[in-house]
Length: 189
Image 1 (cartoon, rainbow, N blue to C red):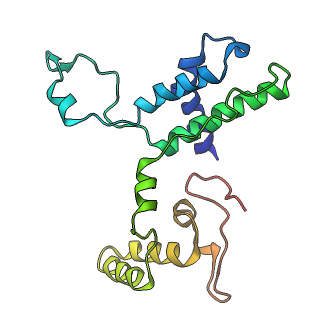
Image 2: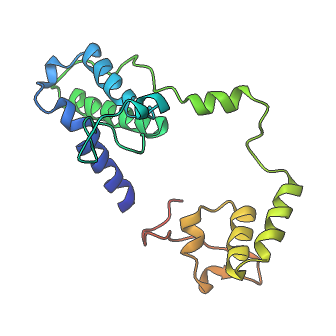
Image 3: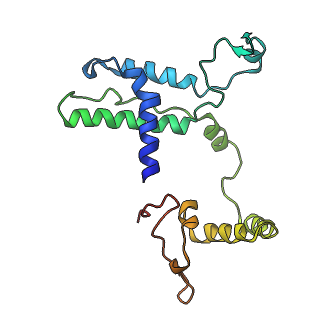
């Protein structure tokens, strides 16, 4: 999809290229990858209350504004790591290097997922919760109810449901044909 290509290009240009741009490919080793990971790990961390209190401002601007207000999610960072590994696999295929320095590098830890996994919180709605949600959404704008109903019972993705046209729905055979998603691209089969 076009959106996937855009995301990958942004990922490479913002989070991978700036760190590795001046390094020869054959000089990048596992330690270099770990240094990159450490730098990226800082971007997942939110500022603590104490750090905000100690924050020094000049003319209303933060002195050290190196971190963004919105931290990067560990899942996104893992996609960055996967993209980086793909770059090295490409280099191996071309004969530029013999082994990927990303080999045996552990993924970024997602503390939130670990907390959920270790808690007794459930990840999915039961039938009653689903029905309750649908009843609540029915009282809102009507089209939301039908969108949610289609999402829940079809298993389609949001973009696929949003791209549905009248001709995609066969009421007689009770089937939906999904051919596109909201980005205008063909849906993956």
